[in-house]
Length: 382
Figure 1 (cartoon, rainbow, N blue to C red):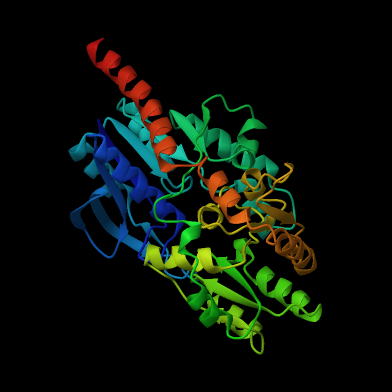
Figure 2: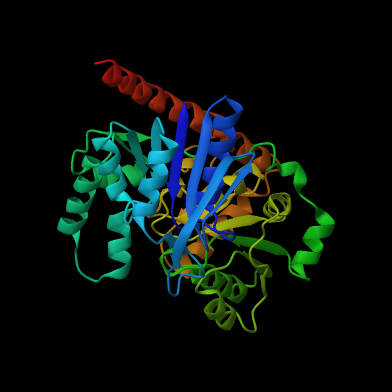
């Protein structure tokens, strides 16, 4: 099967979309399929990798985004697709690339779109008034242009279920269970990161407004006022980087920047006591799942999807959820620190992450594409 994936917001320092693309591509290629991914770049380039063939197209840098880019012209994408002749098309951008879905449908190319974000959540985050009618209109139009709309969690599915979308499919993302492990916890490295503190908190993610990264600093301040000797480690980069550094002056906060080395990132997550995911509209949060695989419990926003895989309502949770304030997050962190007294907690975290292997994501996607490919063959034979 010839699979092509087109994604914006992909770059040297991007996170979840980049990881997803590489994991899917590696899996598709290992199972004997052809995989090409088209992403924004500074020019037209083509190179082979273990994840498939990567093609970059000229793009526009989005102002104040921290370097994110979008493909400049969809005509270039269409010309490429005519040459590549895919059996299946995957799209990771519900905004600027949605017309490609309708174009593909006119040519009997089965196209699916990943809804990596919640539009209703973004609207509430940036506007003080309701945009529900516009959100519903956009989501109806989006679903009409694709064979399937793919969401990763119940939270991400909600806005499509509300408008009774019939071609909605849920495909959870995964985690690299070979790379992330509790056994990577390094006490010497931990001592270096703590710099004299007793508790190590880690915030891994893009520093952008909708993810509310300053919430972690707010929580740290509350913990310090309560006499908890904690240090906060930020891993990542983004448009709020400078602002966060200003806010953290005089506080025990360390900024490690973007870490491309996945092995090093896994060691950092395994060495921390608690991983923080304050984004209130996260539709999945790969960093949270990677933290669990590394044996580290997670504190997340109670309005995001992350709580869906923290076993919150069970007798053995692997984290906690909190209201969207520094005070509430500090309370949840204290609860999780109490949980950490159980030496079995790291293994419980890892066992929960085992429920989300990339192999399961891959199998669900190929099953979806297999049905689409069969439909395509029937149309050709007609």
